[in-house]
Image 1: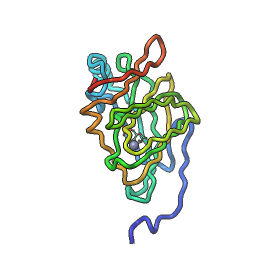
Image 2: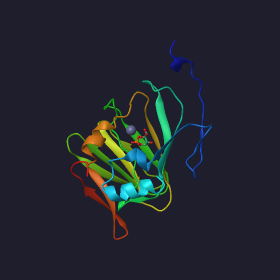
Image 3: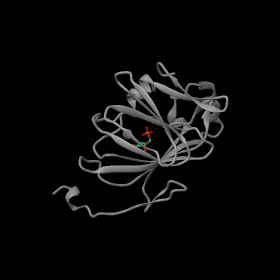
Image 4: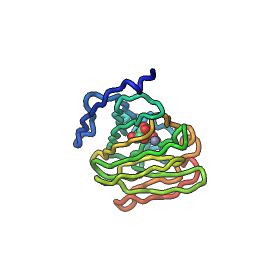
Length: 193
Ligand code: M6P
Ligand code: ZN
């Protein structure tokens, strides 16, 4: 019998202030040095990495099997910050199994969800508390914090999705968001930067 037939129902608690999940979830911390080559301003990137290598975001994932039939879920906390004028963001990914969708719901703070597909289409969705965004199959997704407090969202996606980071690392994300005159400005971006 596979493990999915024997799993008992359970619940977790999400701290809506911090985004932390209890009982303790699998935690992942990404520092600026983990995002090499992704930001446009390489001089600012090198300076910030050398001057303390800040935590850009944390992910707290509920432990369930990464299998067809299960739903994975996590919170992501993106800290406020910029590399040059570009806001702190997640690596961004396609699903390895591309026909897999995902839902992001903003719990706290403010930011953007950026989406792009292999046909060259792109979209951006403003994320504020209560906004629940649907990421259809085949769309790459990246989130970023445009505020001065942590931006916290909850994500749910199929257990057999997987993460493909290579496509974004090689081609870059088709949209980028920079601070311009104190406000976020979404720009089309060709190539890695
Ligand atoms: C969301 C989900 C996770 C993802 C996280 C960080 O919470 O999509 O699967 O890991 O964001 O994004 P990334 O993996 O692109 O760094
Ligand atoms: Zn995803």
